[in-house]
Length: 502
Ligand code: 3UK
Picture 1 (tube, helix red, strand yellow):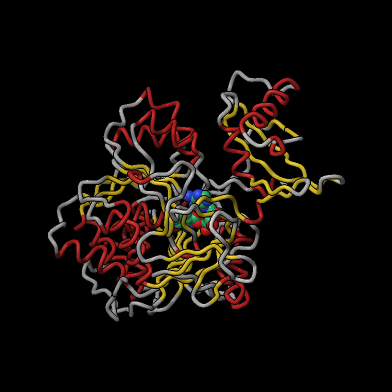
Picture 2 (tube, rainbow, N blue to C red; picture 1 turned 90 degrees about the vertical axis):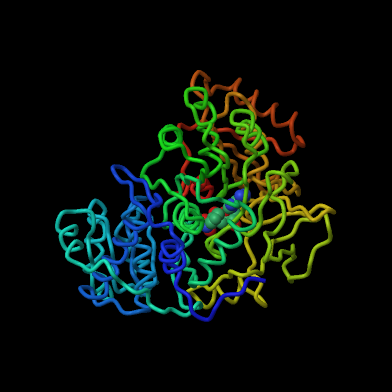
């Protein structure tokens, strides 16, 4: 079991301690036109922490809205808020005024740090947000001047290890966002567990990837993990798959973080790049199909690190080790976590049967909303909305979010399993499968398909794909309805929004 002292501050441990240990001259952060050592980073964090407390009146416990694309400056905002004892409330760059207003109310936000290029929507929200007292825009000359006048010395606030460090909002695949509170010790626990036991990064690693820092997958993978390892991180916005692969080559990145779609879209581009620097690839956010994993392995020689995590538990809690990978399996709980599959009454289901995953470990779920807390956390077990089965050796197999299980003629079919079959067909670039109401069968499967260039979405293609599913899965899993589209709705975190397809 992980033990933490009664007091700790995440920034003190991730950054100040790195300097005490002699990492001062190592490269901490790389961005567009930016290369900062740990010492550079610390000065900027201290200046911003000074500015927050002296000019913006921040006191420990205040909630600070953070708004920015993935850049080293955005990372400074996170670290400075923690250092000053504030609670970071990260927001996705694309959020609109109405959504920001909702998060500001739900999170009782009093302060904001906002990248200049994203200020417009926040300004639109402000008149309706009386609780938001202080807003500072960063990334323009006025800010740079103000910051330069601040002291580069700042002692980390002596936060208790169970003081809140962030409020993370779920990414909205199901509608209204839910805020989850995570503590300073949760930030450290995710590093100790995910890095210490699973990823095992070293100070020579260069991290890169796509998830926004406002998504805890990105906060861990692109900010906290690299600092924990005293390594370097490349923080860049709008890393579409072709840009990401170029950046891996340019910066000699060694560890990538992205969702399965990202890997799928990079795979065909690999022959045009030299990405031999890359050693590890972390996939999360959505189910990684056997085919996507295989093609990435064939193209790069890398067996992926697939892990399932969630906003509710802050990061990955169940994961497959590359050297202990069973086909189709998500592996086992990471050290420190316990998992069990339960039915609606919280009774464990027998081996081989499908149940909902419940998880208990060093991080846990604290929703802002009491109601939600009662229904999702029982006896310290967080009940995820995901269905799995387990084999007799204890390996877990993900089926789908419970909401994405389709019941057709009495059969249970999960969306991701049919999607992964379709993705194996050479004509299919992307796809999403949902259930639509049917008078005879309850529901039938409908597939939305994005074809690869050079293929035509006509009747014969529909038939071809239906036959392909019938041959590669139980025949009742074939999509009776097929629609060809040019793109699929995805969240900023790369997750397919099946509710939009519905
Ligand atoms: C799904 C996966 C299959 C699953 C997240 C890593 O995704 C993250 O957080 P969210 O709160 O969503 C959680 C849900 O997404 N999912 C995530 N990873 C996988 N399904 N295979 C996977 N590897 O339904 C889960 O309940 O947005 C992931 C780290 C931090 C995160 N917040």
